[in-house]
Structures are given as structure tokens and as C-alpha cells.
Amino acid sequence: MTIRYLHVIHSLDPRGGGPAEGVKQLTAVAVGLRHQVEVAVLEKPEQRWVDEFQCPVHYLGPTLLKYGYAPRLASWLRANMHRFAAVIVNGLWQYHGLCTWRVLRGSPVPYYVYTHGMLDPWFKHRYPLKHLKKLLYWPWAEYRVLRDARAVLFTCEQERLAARLSFGMYRANERVVSFGVPEPQGDPEAQREAFLRRFPHLAGKRLLLFLGRIHPKKGCDLLIEAFAAVAARDPHLHLVVAGPDQVGLQDQLMSLSRRLGVGDAVTWTGMISGDTKLGALRAAEAFVLPSHQENFGMAVAEALACGTPALISNKVNIWREIIADQAGLAAEDTLQGTVALLRDWIALSASQRCAMAVNAYACFDKHFRVEAAAESIRATIERHAAPRAEAAA
Image (tube, rainbow, N blue to C red; front, side, top):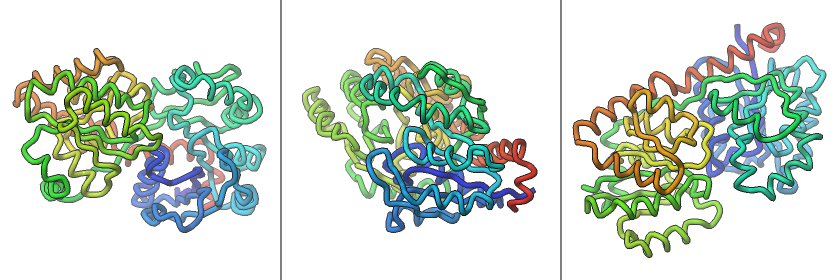
């Protein structure tokens, strides 16, 4: 049975992290599996990143206000809802979810909500003022969006359980579905060389790689301090920090690295993509993410897919799978925990590191393939919307 479904998302800007990249990967593999999938995004057509999508993308921007109010979205959904067996809302706290609820509630077209970790209680402790603001419109907006969704989708059991602790009046038909990333394509050695050509001073170094948004949530300050605590153990150790600086944190972290005496042993690449990104993952001995909150961690799965062990905090919700498969190490999201991560890695023998690299790919293959995620979504929709699926085909 063929079904057609729609992803709705505020932005496809890859600098925004997980939701945009998740939709990109899910739709790409869905097309390969012959699903009929489309995307509605609240941006204007000139945004360059949408050219990378392999399915129809409908541009319903521009938006107004930080909330992302898009005047065109409601009328477009009403005119097109009949074409879809289901609609998937990606992310919370912006207009696209509330608008989808208003248009589809009571209609024969069900909608689902992919939270992408946005209900994690870490946010209310880290940003109490923002949490108070969210409390003001939780009862009339997000609460209703979740309550009336056919299902609220989580990427793992730990994310599902944590969501219940964020807000009162929480009601949702919860469902855990698979999530993942595609297997990297291309010549690994050529990709590694491409990265080292761009950053030739890294050749011959033992690289530890952070890949992601430079953001307080990611524990970047812990990583710099922990690296400074272990760097003297091997003069060939080098930390690579790759990712966009969205909140102006990089200058502070660079100053911190200089004060701690490791400024020359840290390279800041900015955002990288394509073969350069894959080359960084393949050139690194290990991927490091001491995050304070991570519902899945796509970059973690990408590292595993490249055979790169993951050194992560136990606030990355897939840490149990990684530890069980001996595909990396995990510790508390504290300075002491992050130092222990790096020290334990350095203490491993070369043969132990090689074995963990083999295990890293096996862990990806077992748990985190995006094909399984796309099929999981299709199965969920088919289970709930089989009569509509045939009509929409």
C-alpha cells in the first residue's frame, strides 16, 4: 500500500540542528523506499538549503515575529489536506504546530507530532524565564497540539519518559519510533584526505572531534576544560570543534582555551558539510559530546556510522545502546565526568581503540539506520490511517 504524507516544519536551515537534518534524512530515504512524501516549510523559496531535498517542498513563508506566524499556512493546509494520509508536525513552540492543530482537528486527516527533544525537562531548569513564558501559552497551544495528535513520536524510551516531567496537564498518545541516519557514501580515504587538505596542520594528530552547534546545551565549556586537563598526556592530542556559533559563544570558548594553555591545540572549523564533514568524522579517533541534553544526537549516530567511537555524557539519550555495544564511553555531564571520558579513552591501547571502532559501526548498523526510521513512521501512519492512505495514493 502506498501512502502520501506531509512533514510540516518551521525551518530547514541546517544550522538549526536536529529537526531540519532529521526531516532531510527521513524524506531522502522515504523517497528511496518509494514513499510519497512532501514538506511544507515556513520559509521563502530562495533559501539555498532546500535545494538538497529530493521531494516536493512547499514554501509558505515569510513568517512574522519570533513565533514564526505564517499567514499562508492555514489556507494551504485546508486546500491540500485531502491529498495526504497524515501530517507530521516537526518540533514544538512555534506557529506551525498550533496552525496544524487548528486546521486538522476533527478532520479525517490525522496529524502526528515529532517532539525532537523539545519537551525535555532540562530546558526548564537551564532557562527558567523561558519556561515561565512557555507556561503562559502551554494550556491553550502546545498542550492541545499534543493532546489531540493521533500520536506523539519519541525517538527512544528515555525521551518519552522525560517528556512527562516538563509540564502539568500533559496528555499525549505516546509512541516510540525508530530514528537514525543514512550510511555514509563515498570513499572514506578520499574524504579523510579532503578534510586534511582543508586543515593540513591536523595531519598526524590524534584528533578528538566535537561536531554540532556551539551552544551551552552541548557542554562545550566542559569539553575545553577537560581537554586542557588531559592534553599534556600526549602532545599529539588535538581537539577539533566543528559547528556553527549560533549564540556568540565561540569567542568565550577560544579565550578559555588560551587561558588554559591549549589554544594552539584546538581548531575551530566553523560549520562543515558533505565530504569535509565525513572526512572529519573519519579522521577523528573519537567523537566527543558532553551534552547536558540530547534526545537522540544525530551527530553521534553519524560518527558511529563512520566507525568512530562516541565519548558522550549520559544525558545523550542513546548512551545505553552505545555502552551495551562497547561502541564508546559515557559519563556524567560534569567537568569530572568529561575529564574521565577523555582520560579513559587515552588510557586504551591501540588494539582496544580499534575494536571499539569496529563496534561503533556495528552499533549503528543494529540501532540507528534511517531506513528503519522511515519504515517505522510509515507503519505508524498505516496502522492509524489505512483507509485514508488508499484514498490519498
